[in-house]
Image (cartoon, rainbow, N blue to C red; front, side, top):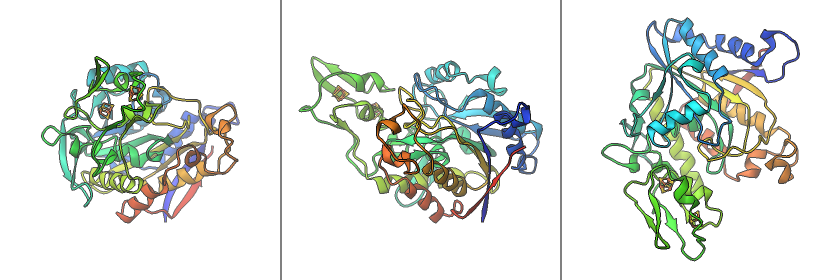
Length: 374
Ligand code: SF4
Ligand code: SF4
């Protein structure tokens, strides 16, 4: 049985040890980082930097605690993410969202380079065949996967599995294009982006959100460059009319994410990757989106574990039991308390991603949740 350590977001006493950063320090001690990392190892602190407008990410105050905990072992941490929009712009987004060398205490590094295609093909399962793992993550000897748990329009729930599967993979491989990048999961075996002129209102939102300028409206006509497109799905998510779709089979999507997560983990020696899940600011959508709605579930706390499957199952179990926050999308949808809010808002078979990871031997759904409070 795997162990997951948890501390609540509640603070009941006026003492630093009872603060959330103080509790995070205590949780990180449970991971025995000094035994996992060698002196001078470069350790990736993988997190999502957000997007312009999606600011509800893991804040620098928390990442700083993770960085400091790595630093105490003699290893050298860096904070990293793969390119989601043009690389220089993405660094600026991180800065605007409060993440930089000064605030985090370690440099911010684009894991797949300024152009988002510095990646290495790694053997994956039968659905993907191979996947483009960001070169910095591929070469790093160790990693702390810091995941903001939330809902997601495609995966229902996004936590550590998605942070590995999508977040550690390039949008595009230098030689193999999007077919070996994140898009190979978003539309596996499908035709790619579909546009329906009958329902399009030509509002232009899809072109505005595209990070690669792959969509243009010329003389009232839709122009789409399939070669530059990463098949990331951002455009189809913002289309309110259903005119733009990225066809996807949910079950296949979850299985491909598990294959990708396994491929990323295969680049590390056993015991070199640990997980910190922040059950905070639990909003309905991905941190890639152009906005972050108000949280639908109250802050729960932080979990740490060295078992991917266990921490994800424990996180989902906790979120499933939660009550909807007033004045949120969950309240608008009248989701009853304890009725799996994330699945109600984004009806996807979210459990499948965890089940598939367990089948691939990435951890155990059987966990013991140990609560650590000062
Ligand atoms: S967002 Fe949808 S409706 Fe608006 S222009 Fe794009 S495809 Fe058409
Ligand atoms: S899927 Fe849409 S938003 Fe993403 S790169 Fe392609 S055209 Fe742009």
